[in-house]
Image 1 (tube, rainbow, N blue to C red):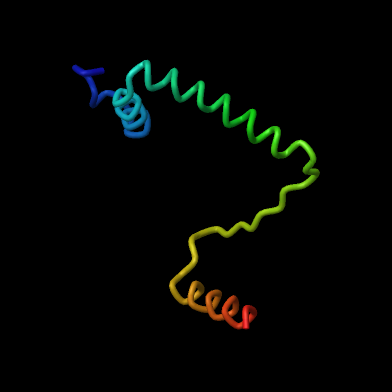
Image 2: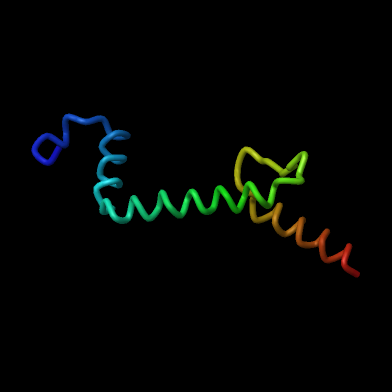
Length: 77
């Protein structure tokens, strides 16, 4: 990879370079932590039948954020 980096497509090259920034110890610790977090999440969700979240195709615009802030402020009063 070091000698022929240009032979890789940009997506694969970027992924490989990002992965090269971490040591094997970093990876092992991340896998362990992921297992812990999965267990914690599974325990927290044990009695949950449905998780409903909002979704949007993009981030809120500044105008939308101002309007939302106004609505929340009005509801609090």
